[in-house]
Image (cartoon, rainbow, N blue to C red; front, side, top):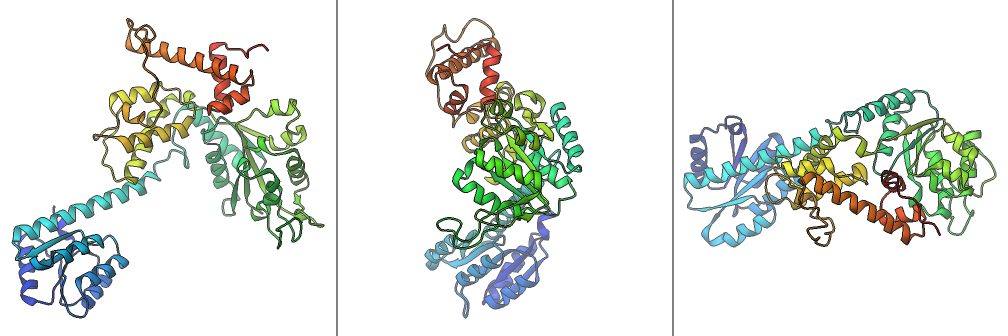
Length: 465
């Protein structure tokens, strides 16, 4: 309360008697930082020169009305709390002010209790807003390593590898399942390198149509193709003296693979339709969730390009191998989402924590983050429960008692049911895809590595045809 009474309060009214009455009421409660103004123009001048927290203003004033003053205040600083003072006959006008951003209104004649209740409510709201803002700012400062959250041994190993490779300026290939943080690793390498003050350009290769990828990467000259009305600088040129990150490089076409090999070998590019080369100094970091060894053996990825990009290899661990990080990540995401939606939450229930620790998280950190977001959106109390985390998920059909393995411990029954589901899920997906693992993974919405992990876990082979 003592800190709250340091807030600067501005009283605006062209009636000096009303102004004096309000000042006496506010001072009686221990507030000393009180300013007064008899016009909107003077009020704006005081706001400009002082860190005003709350404004109490009359609606009907000459020259500038309370509504006009409200609009100007909100343009200057939307964080200033505005309380409207109005007569009984102008309550409709006060409601208009509320719609325009006023936080409350007081009707004349007013008592000291009513005035102080409105002020204390305003101060509490302002303090809560500041706390939410501070929380948002502090969240970005609590990462364990750059933007990574995690203290598990696998992540400590990743941090050491990133620090080791950052300064050697060699191509880096980052592999791992979807959602494991491959782009975060690339950004950390760049930020630790001597190129940190130069651009880092990120390219999601699958999101650019194959026929456009070459032009996007290497640029083109005017007239190179239909609609090429002017020269265009490519992303490699934009990244000159910096870093380019090619995400999901396993998906690029053979033609682009050949052009990329030339860039890595000769350190130069030739824009599409151009006749002269441009020398470049760019560090190339690539990533993929595919098995490039398999794609090389299948003739889908150039072997010479593979060895060019795979000078240094970092494999990001799946979330299932980072058990001690799961709750840490979940709490981080909970704070992030709670701050974003201004929800005062006090963590997870024991049931939610148990679910977080036992779920397989096939989608890795990305899936965990989305699950926590669902929990924050659907939470009913002050702590996120297991049901909140699952609120956005598809419901499974009810199962009979024998399928639920009733009779053993809860944990044993649950694990047995989960294993039964995973086995049937993988077998069914493989049958539908004709034994094509990549197609089965794609159609079920999980990464190929996760699908292969489940196959290996349960000894499932592709069906014979």
